[in-house]
Image (cartoon, rainbow, N blue to C red; front, side, top):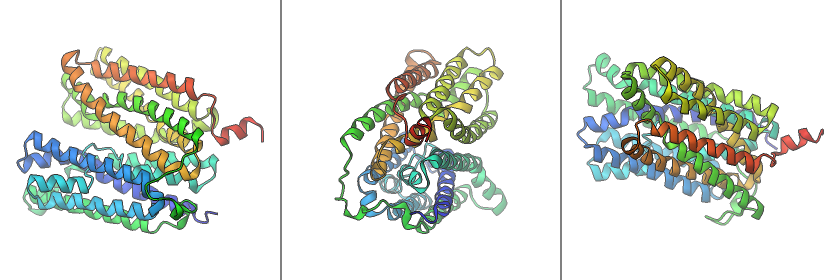
Length: 412
């Protein structure tokens, strides 16, 4: 049925690594570059918001049309369109045009890959192997994504390196890097072109455009999961890397250099925890892994503001980061397990879109709380919201098991 699963998985993982490398790089240098070319903070925010809005629209289109058009073709189109963003930054058009091209190119200034391609990858991977391998394959995919993002962030010094080694002006060095980013997007498109027909759903071409059929019982399950994931993402919006780094800077006076090492360690822990999650899920189940790792991670986080020193605050924070991402591959695997293969694109798209929207809302509310209530409010409130999510998730879904766990518990 799927003669080349390893080949398809290797192509998707490599494409995800390269795409995430580019996103990690942009997350560090995009705002700085826009400032260097003379944009005001308001205009910088407008360009970044335009890119995220483009990504949101692409996710909606993916959710409704990717299975009809073809998953492979849609991934290639997304990758080619992303190259527009790098070219736009390199040629430096005036603001209205730059914002439009940022929208078209889906420029991502968050440093984290939560694109339409990311959501579509999640829909494809579960169908490339048996249920028993589903969580492991998703964990490996997330390992590649986090690894790429970490290395991309470390590569943020490339413009300065090119300036010193190649005798280029600083802005010219940035342009070279952005053209390289576009080349990376084209490479990703080429990798997706090599995917076999096994990534498509059966009879996908017979689906009506922009219409998705979801079984009534699955609609209810998906609605509950989307609501819970939105709550989790709202709490996560309080805890972005930028905000937590700012908290450490203000609380302990720690500079960017030292914080860079802290957050590199954070992303390394995040990456390897995905494999730990796959191992644990095989022994205690997906829902138990999601809740029993995520809940203590939130408690570690809520303890950080009470740490007496930077050392203890970092230890608590790293304990949190070693656990907090273990619900990512398990969550993706659980969603894929509860719906039919033909419903996975819609399920992945709608849950990822909801998470991105509420993540953005939480980020906005966090800044207000930090200023109006107390400086440590985002860590406490964000952690509390996530604890509430864990409790509600466990109460709602602890008895609804994926196929591989039903088979195991049934002794077959």
